[in-house]
Picture 1 (cartoon, one colour):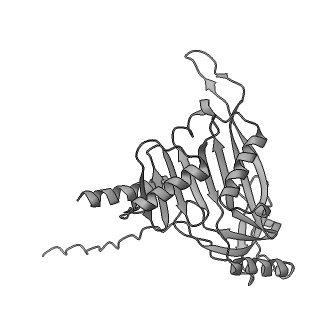
Picture 2 (cartoon, rainbow, N blue to C red):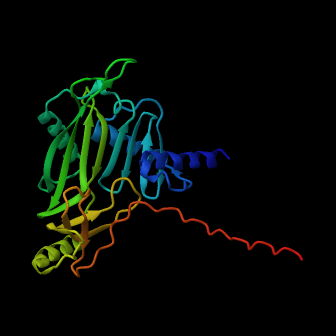
Picture 3 (cartoon, helix red, strand yellow):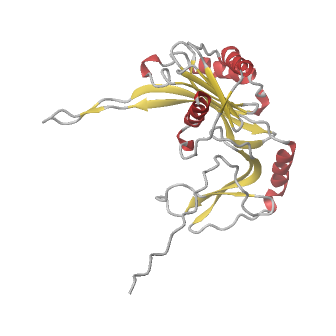
Length: 293
């Protein structure tokens, strides 16, 4: 009975750490990792990412995703190069933000990428994003008082290309705390198959002859060959080459720009899967009984 409860708890644990997007999934019985596999994952967190584990750790696996946690820091891994690290204490404590320079943040990110086997030639761009906050106070009987913008956390964002082909699904996101330790990290940088890259190359070669479909009240703004793959939050490892077509709405007040992803045949491709939604059971509805005369 205890073993069954432990497995169900791991299932919920895995779905929770994979993010709110998977909250709609039905929890399956997750399998606990062996002591050897747990120790290996724990060592990876220590040596590669500098995690300092506190107390006992627990680990489990679910549909190709493995995870280890000490209750504060959680490391998940899917495949060769998809990781998520979340330190629930440091990621929410704005008083312990990284105080180093942008170059120091980039250098730390570069060391992590090198340690995980990311090729320098695949780095498209490395940017440091600054979060700003602004507070307002309203006292009874008084006008609202608004403080000036305050600098918040900085996040390193690294994007990817392979052989001149943009891979918008891949990214490296890094937040550090005041001591330089990882508060949050997402690395989504899977291996791309030769077949997928060859298909992207064929699309690039045929791009001039391809005619994007018309979209009502919009015109083509840009078109480029890309490789798409399943995101870090999910249980799949799909990938597909496509021509990414971005449309500009004719009316500026229109919201999000339409985007289409086309195969070399000009038809829309099937996008990589993220989640496997639970199937709804068919509800049998009984006909109301006829009233007796």
